[in-house]
Image 1: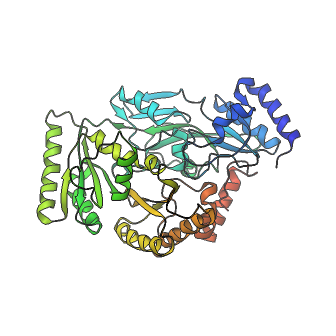
Image 2: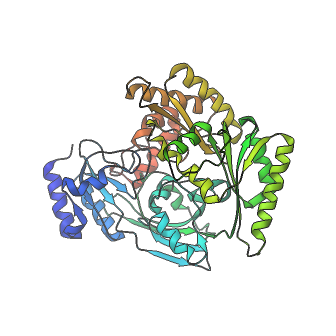
Image 3: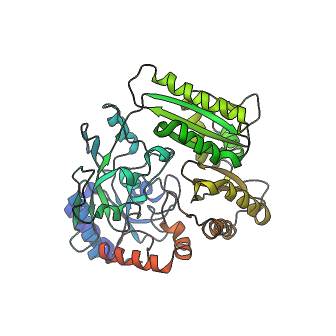
Length: 476
């Protein structure tokens, strides 16, 4: 628990250095920073809204002097509680929302320099004016700094990879006595003149430093799109279809997403904006959302993409690997996929699992996981969906509102741990494919990560964050 004297002294110093408008202390003002858009809540000691890198540095120096732990916060859309304060008010929130105006586009270099608080939607709106896009496709609207801190993947990973693949440079403030600023920008795609330090800050959840600016490689906006919702004859043939699609479409294959019947029916029940394209037929047991895109200027590029997709699906129908293919406007099909997480909230308490597997193990894992849930947690409902193209899977469970025992947090944790054990111990997979560690996954990090790996990660953290000033989780 932080001393009230130290808290008051730190607030006075920050007000003096940054101005009263950038320091929030009242319960009414703090409420917006205490509850995550998607998961996690708590109580903040105070919140600071720096408007520049120098002000971030000043904030970290001040909090260090007074022994106050800092939680860096972007859009606060994460799922592991890493951007939320604890329940007893020991953390200061460092919000990057005021650092959201810098968007410098270099069309020739096909890159952009942006401040960490810029939202993905705002960045892409600006890029679209130059026929460019940052093609990380997500259901939420995160900040760029948060995306880099968690190394976001998304639904177009199969084509564009994770955020790490796009980061050209970073500016980061360290939580040491000087509030040291590391400038690792320059816009270069090729630079082996020493250690590539920026990699240490990507995907580590802000444990090593606060990202304030980023240089990102962007892509040419797609001009032509062909999309279909495809029904495989079973989950066992999904990988066969995936490998076939990669061979046929090459780089034009941008998405290969899977959705279970439960997940799709949940969307159709609760999300009026989502149209059921299977009617009058029943919703299938599983469906694949396949997207191909082209950036070429050819006038018949869209027709050519559609013809190639049609031909691939016709061959798959004849071979029996698929039983149906539904065509609709791409936005309508993507609405189904992007509405799943929101729809699940209407069903009950969500136990979200974000796991990573080898692509060929996804359907095998589903078989084992369903059997495990049915045997030990039969009242839980499974709503699985995910990124078949990269092995990322959201094997989400829901504790129903009705027809089930009263929610028990210990039993929910037991279910989560049982499934994570299956993922890691049998399939050598990851218990956190995209969202990082945070307080929610801390116990699983400790359990499933090798001691030697934890020790080495802890030594690196000690170099950049020597006083353990940043974040709510430990890499030791």
